[in-house]
Length: 388
Ligand code: FES
Ligand SMILES: [Fe+2]
Image (cartoon, rainbow, N blue to C red; front, side, top):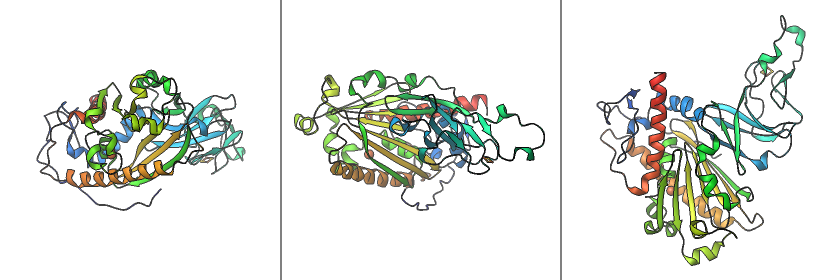
């Protein structure tokens, strides 16, 4: 990760909720924005709302946590932070995939860090409590030092829901989300011909950005800025005349049509037809995942993890059907796109802090932002209605 820069921004309180007369939380209007507008700008500046998003939105959602290349053998594990919760995914002794809170039931140390292989059992680094790969507690050092009998069954690892689409592994901490297939609908059907289990990860990017995570999501799901902010990098792919936008429950899609020259430069995966063979797709998956899928069968996965109210971890994993090829030009182009995006997110963060700003109208190329903001606010409003 690149080092953090501290930035201090506080949005002065606007005189009353700026949108509608619905419920508020810490002075922020909590209601899905109208189709032609955007959510309350104060939502980007509330510490209390940030904590609520972490506690409600991330645990209730399917969150990307790993890919299957990290989880081949028993004991292989990957970690992720979901709504502030340390989580791990592990390949168990029977070959199944399991996910647990990465928190020791004794004194709460995390059990594993990063990714790797933990061997046949998980051993806590603090006092050596030992767990099977299915989460059962099987070893306690110096056991006689504890008073009374230990209830072994009560001190296993806390399991959470995990599921896989193609090679992408998702975790749902609450266990209450719709199935992963429903969550991702219609990606599994629409991308069945792309063979997304096949391509290999060829490079990774991991940045820390001085921007609220929702500003970064708005920008990631914005297709209006492409020809302007990215004029020098990928603007050539962003002619609005070649773009269509669609929205589903938790997902949205940008479809671009490429020129014959652009298609022949990258190649088309055999078996693809229609829109899949004539351009690229970019899918948004609520709340923080993005996958761009290219006609050659390659893909870029991006996701954004809130670190604090004003800081976000931005990651990219790039997949190619040609892992031995030279991907430097591709990498440099993506770095340029990211520099452009990070710079504009920091500008938006500064401008949103103006107490005179009210959301402007919404362009049709901002449809995927609408999907993100309406789902986010609906989830928060549902939560507050039952647990104010
Ligand atoms: S915190 Fe894990 S064994 Fe004590
Ligand atoms: Fe961008």
